[in-house]
Image 1 (cartoon, one colour):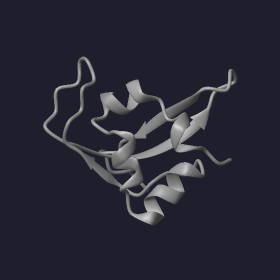
Image 2 (cartoon, one colour):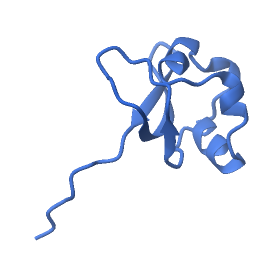
Image 3 (cartoon, rainbow, N blue to C red):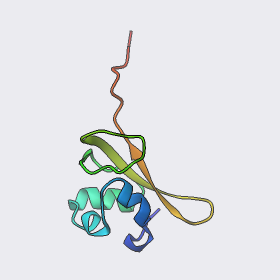
Image 4 (cartoon, helix red, strand yellow):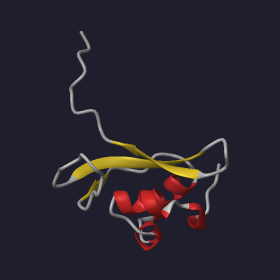
Length: 87
């Protein structure tokens, strides 16, 4: 599924401290992954404006999804901080 830069939700971008210009300036591999609906590589976020979340910086992957009503939403995927017990 492919997305357009004009479909990106401005308010969600503001919450994670990004603009459309920041998205356009991503490395080609990261930009292509995001705009095709896949997860990006790990990105460090410094300017999170999420209510109730008070962290200096946070690493996460991003992806886009299309909701049933046709709107596009940004999905935020922080890495699992707990090691898995494989035994």
